[in-house]
Length: 202
Image (tube, rainbow, N blue to C red):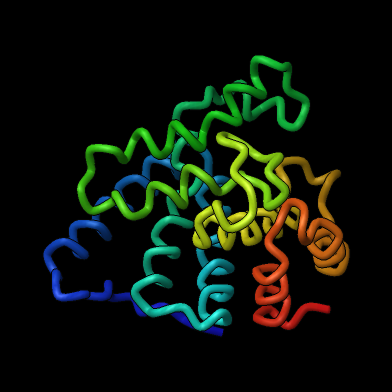
């Protein structure tokens, strides 16, 4: 399993990368203050996403980009009232709309932050489905950025085993079967395969 360095990759621009790490750390602190479970979820999704990207032999720079985006994939939840989180998963139509809008909200929050520009598509589209039935833009197949497809699988798996309501928790085996069942519809088949191989799941 790929283990990212604690030091940011320089890519020839150490000042910019240091700034990005600082920005991400600040935003994660805000997320942690709002909801500890969301904070831990974001960290775990980043770990899973890095494992997938490394298994797919993506360039190191892209792996780091995916890691950063995965850490911030739910940052838009800062705009969702805590009262909505308290009702999960039993939301009204209006509450569900506010909840689902976190993809756009997160990307809008980063629009004017220079070092975050490359992360925006991965954050905005991590709830798109491979069959085109996701949100916010109903993108389909390879029209969904690969980084977003990777985060989608990592996010889905962690949601299965660490849901908002313990009653809905699945075992690792059940979660793996869920990924496989939704492979080719909700998720990219190749990304699911890479995740299962990287994690040693069956």
